[in-house]
Length: 129
Image (cartoon, rainbow, N blue to C red; front, side, top):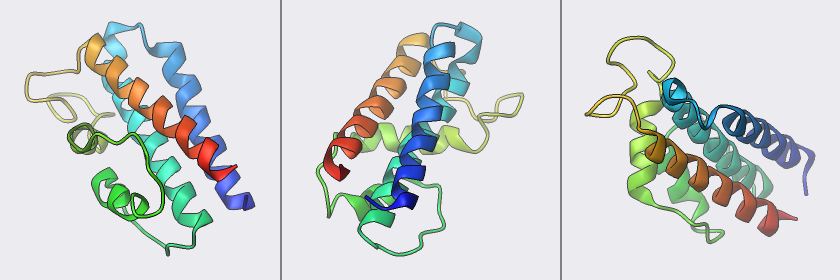
């Protein structure tokens, strides 16, 4: 495995560690979603680097997943990726930005995001090692 690939995977793991520390805090569900998006994005970029799929300057999980799914089979749920994309940019800001149509993600929703990120990270490591 390339060093850059390892770096992306380690960075994704840092997001997952942070998620585990905040996963039960109802006021931080939007941050769980943000870090889940980040972890998934970094896994996709690890795959892109490992397979030399080019330099892709985007944060869109939907776009990145379309590139990596040609190379490896990941447990992808496109609807979840689209939802995480919607939450991504504004999840760190106050007000209505970065929220789902009905407000902040619920604890169960944030746990789903976390589980998806964990599954993608685990499968990516398994395939690339």
